[in-house]
Amino acid sequence: MLCPGCKHTDNRVIDSRLTESGLAIRRRRICLKCSRRFTTKERVEDELKLAVVKASGQRVPYNRDSVVGGIQRACAKLEITPDQVQALADKVEGDIFNGHEREISTEEIGRYVGKYLRRLSPVGYVRFMSVHRKFATVDQFVEEIREVRTRAAHESPDQQPLFEE
Image (cartoon, rainbow, N blue to C red; front, side, top):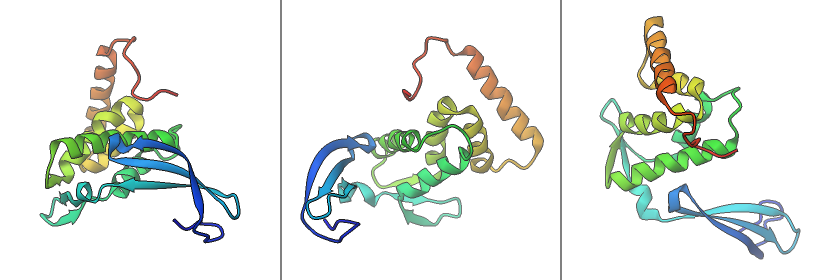
C-alpha cells in the first residue's frame, strides 16, 4: 500500500475494524518513512458484483458512493456527521447484501435509505424522499411531513436512537 504523502510502500497497520455491516475491514496505517497516518478499506470483490436496476431499466454496478452521495445531499447543512452518514450507508448495505444476490432496483435502495434516514433526521428524510419519489407538488411534501409527524408521535420516547452520539 502506497503512503498518500510520500508514496513509500513500507507501512504498518495500527488498527483494524469491521465496517459496512461486516462487508469490509477498515485499517488505520502509519507510514514507516514519513509517519503519516492513513486509512484503507479491504472488501470482498464478489459482494460488489450486485447490479442496480435503474428506473429506465439500465443495469449498472452497485456503487456505495452513490448511496453516500444521496444521503449527504439530503442532509446538507444539517447536523449530521460524516460518521453518521457512513454508519447509515453501512446499515443500508447490510440490508442490500443480505437480501439480494444479483440485482436490486434503485427504488428498493431508496426504501432502505429512507427506513434509516427517517429515524436519524426527519428533515433529511423528507428531502431524500422528495427526490426519490419525485415529488411534483407542494401537497406531496405536506403529506410526507404529516406522515413523519404521525410516526414520531407514535414512537415510544424510550426507543433507542439509530446512532449513538
